[in-house]
Length: 185
Image: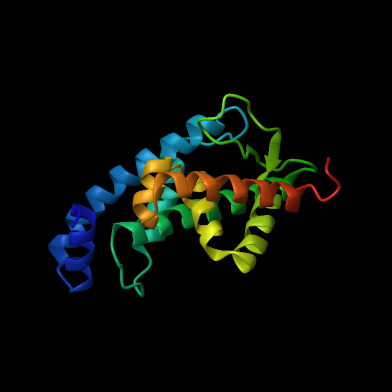
């Protein structure tokens, strides 16, 4: 059992000391995820990792009604709250000025050729549609894209082989590209 999983279980059991230790551990995990995500997107997203970490952290520790199932559950929720924050930020910017949406790339971090920038709100809408069609692939996209996890980390979280994750990632990216570009543009 990982340290995070153990601390989550202790916190679920009402151990206040476990929560204090977990907060320190969670912050380090969130910092790593945010740095990886924003390093990849720094040219198109004007956010500091610290801000993204603080927002995700505040949203995660404010969730009292979740029975944490372990590290995988935590990482999935961290990716989801980061996604929600980035979408909220994009919508706020869109409301302030025309065409002011946050732009992100849907490229795999290990790909040498970058895809064109994609509007995070459009990506969120397409991801919501993917969630209805294929929840497992939608979770994979959240973990890889918004959570910044590597293929190997995603495989461990989803209890899949790295090769299966790679195949699913390619299918999900293709599905999202089609959903966001129905005219093939």
